[in-house]
Image 1 (spheres, helix red, strand yellow):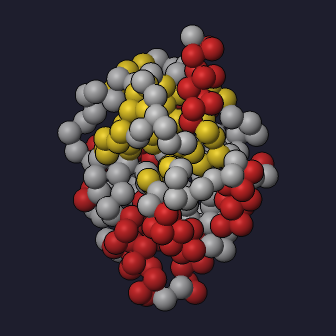
Image 2 (cartoon, rainbow, N blue to C red):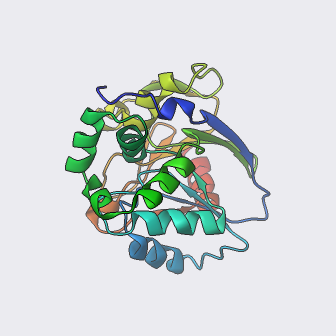
Length: 234
């Protein structure tokens, strides 16, 4: 990977999270800077920000017009967020002045930053650096892994000991998805990911991939329903 990890190495690696069974938990795939599409999908499931929990799989920003608006919304409702490769490119571009990252970011949807204020960009970066690469969630008797993507072989119990070593496998890797390869996904019952565009959500082993945004609308899953679907598969 040619994008450096100078800035993102300071981000947390994995957050442990336990959510009461009585709460509804929704997970949303890549949003690509489109606030209206997120709100349309949340409306369909009657999302209540005061009672329900929302988890984002990263790539909140870029391509669409609402990168800053989406982050402000997530902050306002206390959403849980894992970082994606687009957040990585932004942080390295602006925080560690990685010229390769800046060129790559600008070519892949990051051009919006040229019209944003310095204060807005700094505020976004400072918030992103506090977000983890992964979440290990306990919910309804299940352990669920949450990250932007996942490599072919992974153990949620014995992750590498530092954030830098996990940037490629959890933010960039596509082999599990493109080759439909599932070797090991230890330490969780199942996991949920974005990053890899798909016209419909698909299971690869015990990993669930929901990045449908490029094919129309982002997917918002009710995690309780996904747990039921997982149990039916097994």
